[in-house]
Length: 275
Image (cartoon, rainbow, N blue to C red; front, side):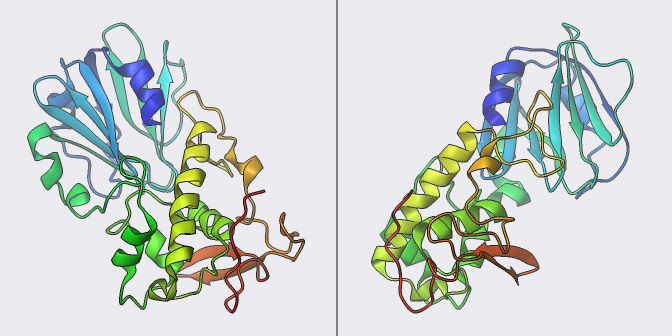
């Protein structure tokens, strides 16, 4: 999403912003339209799952898509408004950028650029695994002494910023690690595989524009295609693509986890060989 926004909105000048007035994860500050209007977008950055749309004169639009949010770009906005659109950014050239979020778990707020690192949503984030790919020893150091499961560890944005539920299951399957294991119990070799597969899974998912099951869409309202590559996620009872064993689904931290009980045995750590 960051790359698509960068390619289509950088250099465009904001004419006006219209908000729905409905609360998202937090209320959208009333000052947001005033802070954006009249300014040109100069860059689009990212920290974990947060998008940072930088405008001239030191203003940044902070955005999180939550569970169902998406940005939609139009060279010419459609005549009929879509449901659940909570921000319409109109540019001076007639194009527009809309933020749609049916479940309203996302986040939108304009902040001063120099204060981005102090924003409560950003200040708590751990290292970004795309900007700074973690090593096995670095992950092992972060997990030392934890009773948290390795799946919970990967999802903790305070330790690693950006890994979502789908990709945590995929990373652990490819690394041959049982998601129920305590993070502190993994060996150095296992953490090395997790680090390697973390980078590989996220890179491929980004190249394929993410994973779509229902609501997620790209900037052009098209589905992501990484779903074709999923090895375990949402495949309960289907055969493992590596060994044929039926995939299991469990619940960890109120989130679904999918894994292969043979390839990801608790007893024997299997070397991760990507098919």
